[in-house]
Amino acid sequence: MNINKVAENTCAVDAGVFGVRGFTSVYLLVGDTLALIDSGSPKSTPLILESINSLGYNPKDVTKIILSHIHFDHGSGAGELLKFMPQASVYAHYSGCKHLIDPSRLTISAKKVFGKKIEEWYGWFASVPKERIVPINDGDIIELGANYKLRVLETSGHAKHEICLYDPASGGLFVGDEAGIYFPEASAIIPASPPPDFDPDHNIETIKRLQALRPEQLFFAHYLTTKVVDETLRAYIDILSSWKKIVEGALNEGLDFDAIVNALIIHAAKVLKGIERREDLHAFIRDHHIPMCANGYIHYFKKTRQK
Ligand SMILES: [Zn+2]
Image (cartoon, rainbow, N blue to C red):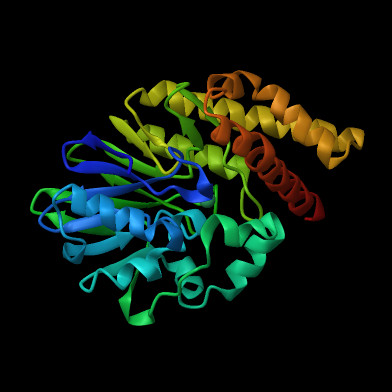
């Protein structure tokens, strides 16, 4: 177990997705009742239950599982967690709800990106009964207590079904994957740009919208949290633009996929150096995450050039 108290009412539980420790956070929020932000994968369920118990709470008291988005590493475990959380409902962006009920299309699309690794990394995508889903949309308020409310922000640069959650009382902002992959050990950030929905320009617009809230603290789905908000969000805009230029230039030159991945690895050299000691994480980012990001940018250019 790897649990961090990251704010007054908030603990980060390591969901252990991809077999990499210290990379995927599920947040336990303690208000009048308990809520989770994200579920990890079905393989994360025992770890999450054990973590909640070890903090002195009962998983049966969780009433809300709020999904930042429904990619496998964040939403595929919600259906499994529900079996142990009889009072809980799953809150997700309205456009993703049909995939929670029937994850088959999402599974096909994820297999295209990750191949057989799907089973090894996640297990499967546990479906969620329709009557236990609450569709949410931009501007909705999720109540966790008398003075504890989260505002839903639709932020669809990373995925169409991505949301961020803002707590105006504390200034906390849960950014899911919308603000990239943050490495607390290196205070560094790199894109989270998977196909098929990623749109760098739209993602930059959503980051500007998040900046305008002037949040005090960012809570990342990957990984943990920072109070260095301005600098981190500005760095994210910079790297989203830089990678866009790199991939666009490479495509114009007719370079192949491996050459594009290499160019991004070179650009990320400083970040990769910062996590060198974490061998499993370093290898995952270099061998799987950056190629997936390259795919997301290439897919974006294919879509925009077809228009
Ligand atoms: Zn994602």
